[in-house]
Amino acid sequence: MSPINSPTGAWLDPEEEDAPTYGTRRKANKQPKQVARAGVAKQSFESNPDVQRWLSETSEAEGHKAPFAPESLVGRRDGAWVLSSLTHFYEQDLIVDVLREVKSGKEATVFCCSGGTGADHDLLAAKIYRPRMFRSLSNDAQYREGRVVRNESGKNVKLSGKGVPSRGSAKGRAFQISSWIEYEYATQQLAYGLGVRTPRLYSQTGNGLLMEYLGDAGQVAPRLSEIEVGRGEAQDLLDSLVESIALLLSGHRIHGDLSVYNILVWDSQAYIIDFAQAVDPRHGDGARALLARDVARVASALAPFGARIDAPAVADRLWWDYLQ
Ligand SMILES: Nc1ncnc2c1ncn2[C@@H]1O[C@H](COP(=O)(O)OP(=O)(O)O)[C@@H](O)[C@H]1O
Ligand SMILES: [Mg+2]
Image (tube, rainbow, N blue to C red):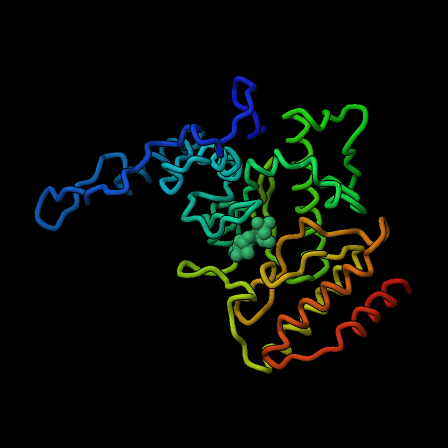
């Protein structure tokens, strides 16, 4: 299933001003629901939780799932776009609902979803790339320099040449970004398998990834930029991040963008996310400098809390160990 094209094949862009919204737009000044009887809020028949449960059990018993229609996406301009990828995860029984938007960045929006029967976690994070990304890929050479894009089975993905749609076309852009997402997915999967502390992945689709959610029902795990830590904890976090960098390097990858925004702290552990810009040091120049930058960034993020390493020396050691 491709979420990229409309049924008519037209290029849908939900970020355009006049793009249709998904569902019925809620009025900002909507009045509270009328109370039918004292203390009992009036509810439509379909939205009653018991009725919803019954509807979904009945349709599952009949061999088909109830249509996926999360309330939280109603009224969003990009609702149809987001829904198209999330429906894929719903069909896989990995999610049952979309609870809320967690973060909306330049490139992607992250949603917190409740886990389905196919997931081992109660909460999952869906990272859905914004349509804008599909437009700006003419500048993506910097991202792909030194990058071997592989599909899930480890085969190289061709980014140009025979059989690959031209980059100027809508199909070509969709191909580029899904190759890119596949690469991000494969890198995070590799990292997880090597023991790097990163969210466990569940699935991917043309414009999004689904993974374990860091946080709980009440709060999302803070980024390293948002917290203060004690001296002992800071040193532990720093040492574990260096360990993660080393593990990743043993799998021929350098994160390349290890800023305080791409490190989440949960249960006193530092998790690395956002592998979109990872590079393979065997291809392209500049890998050693990127490694040194990643080490320097984690060191300076935790230095204000008393954690210390000699970042250039650590980066050199990691590099020479890797070359052995
Ligand atoms: N698995 C996750 N659990 C909880 N929050 C997450 C998760 N993944 C991402 N986030 C939140 O979403 C933000 C953006 O995610 P990220 O992968 O860094 O996307 P971007 O490419 O837009 O930088 C993160 O800084 C973090 O706050
Ligand atoms: Mg990020």
